[in-house]
Image 1 (cartoon, rainbow, N blue to C red):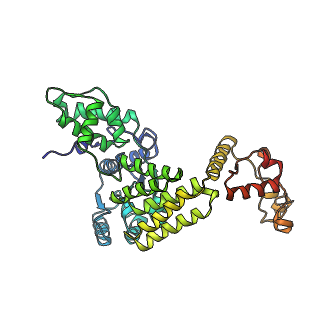
Image 2: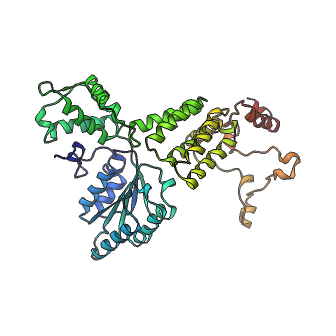
Image 3: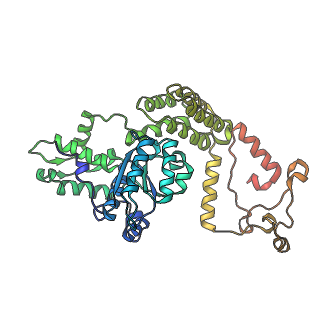
Length: 424
């Protein structure tokens, strides 16, 4: 039985590697390290099918160093220690450290990650981790601090088209078929920027094509995929479609739809922590100041899932989803921070007004640091007007209160404090 198309086309060198020019293009950070012949430990974070595993293998081949692989799903602490011991015994002086590649490192437990720390810190192994989840949540801080983090992007349309062309012209089997890709929209849409998924679709479609009709059209692709429906793939396009529907149902105040899409994820085997994190984001982004308790409840749901596990964890998640969907909505904080970030990018590093600066030394006090600052708690109502924005930005407004009952009280308090500035 032949290898799958995605494996047959796996690049063996950086020259054949498609995408991620910001990391491996000429003059890019990873390319420089690879060309220099030595790399430090790092974690690759990005969506599925963008070349994380391939990149690790290319680096090992290029550096001609031993390459060890561990599965985060099947390996335990003993397996980690065994690999580290083998790497230590097989290393000679002045040679690059063996590479230990851990795919889906976010699935490693805390104890498994702890067992890596000493070897990474001492340079016994160079760790390359790959993850589709945010490392800030899933990788312990001591290990994360010892690794660089590189973010991989979904492949662009041109990258995917290049990959399709390479497949039909270079693959040992497909090139004999003389395939004609008349239309690509359906394959690109279903792939969702995932190279492996794109090649799987191409292989499926090619196998279904009549021998005397080698032309691939969007209609034929759609017919093939309908006849071979893809199950919920928590690393694929449907994953992102369903989580999008889930969040939009909460935002749109439809608790029935929110529960339905949550059930789809649960039945599909989605990681409960992923659902819980999305609820926290929704609580802050979409409910916000209209109901500040929403963020507290979302955090509590996350903690409950961590403590009680599955399947009981579905209950606090459902409680939170219904609560968020039925809550009043406000995105004023979300809009406010994005407006502030845009202002900072446009105006640069504006100086902090002298009266707001810290003055821990005598020299700083002599230079006027903190001079004139009014301590609000010394005034009636714990407020007194004074300038807090940089001099050049005093008239800028970033937060605009929205008029849900809870947020209206905050808005009215600001008008009472600041008058015309918040009435605009």
